[in-house]
Length: 156
Image (tube, rainbow, N blue to C red):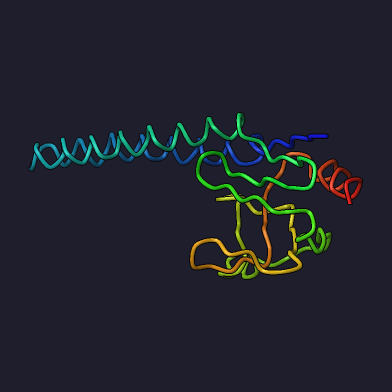
């Protein structure tokens, strides 16, 4: 059985605000820069537009790439930006207590909440290698953390 859990309502609004701030910055700074160095302003504008398009594509992927509980595995995603698959046997538990900002910033924690504060914390029984990092916990910001916790406990 497969269950999907969205996170776009929790994360996307803050990311859209970042896009809006980028647009304002681009209009103001690049217009002023164009008075003194038009070529530099053009290059900077093209790079900014490319970055903005990349960010919009990433935000739109949040809706289409949800977190999945698929049989014996858990697929945790942050759109097209990051994805990690964790076998159910590797999950030590879902932490219900609150955690600090310092804990979410630790190198051994994979924070998929991006610029939001996580509301789901998954402790791993054994570390998971992701590149050169060894992950012991995954944090995420889901739209319905209670339903996720219930589905995860049903599948144990």
